[in-house]
Amino acid sequence: MDYQLPLPGVDLSNGYDHSGNTTELFGAGGYMEKRNNMYTSELFEGKRNIHMGVDIWMPANSPVYAMTDGEVWGVTHNSNELDYGPTVILKHQIYDNTIYVLYGHLSLKTLSFMKEGSTVNAGDIVGYLGAKNENGGWIPHLHLQISLIEPEKVDMPGVVSEDELLKSSKIYPDPRIFLGPIYL
Image (tube, rainbow, N blue to C red; front, side):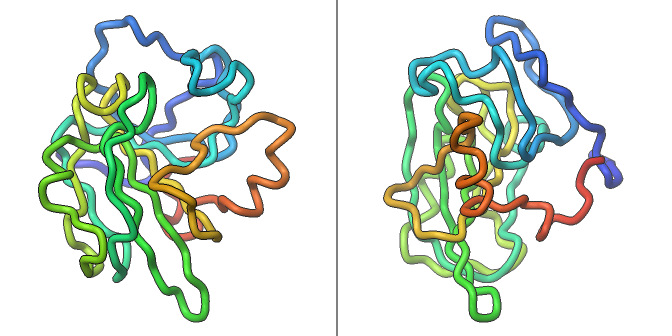
């Protein structure tokens, strides 16, 4: 697929129709984007709607690559409705800083080859985008999120409430500090 940066922005500020027949979008969006009427499962406690990562919509089975050298910190299947589905967190050392990068909404086949403790090099495939029936129920996309603190489990709060935003923004910085201007 040919594309150029920045990717077209996808505006989800008015929500998302989970029952729709749309299976693919192409674009990116969303750090600190307020997404009303979108996170409707009990998982989000009815009040979390500010997105703390970047989403990149591409077709299911598109490869996902490590952005720099690191190790696989954890791999799991977050299988709740509207959760991440298959998820990988990589641990990277950037100068004197350790960061953790969550790759969410992957395919089930990712779980067969990504193993905790394995080394990855920049550009290695760390997974493939999952189809809606395996990625938590979403249109195929990658949720990429950075954490400056070690997660307690293979998960991060992809959306937070307005009350949690200031604290969360200090823990989960904008992934565009590494990705560059992926969207406008």
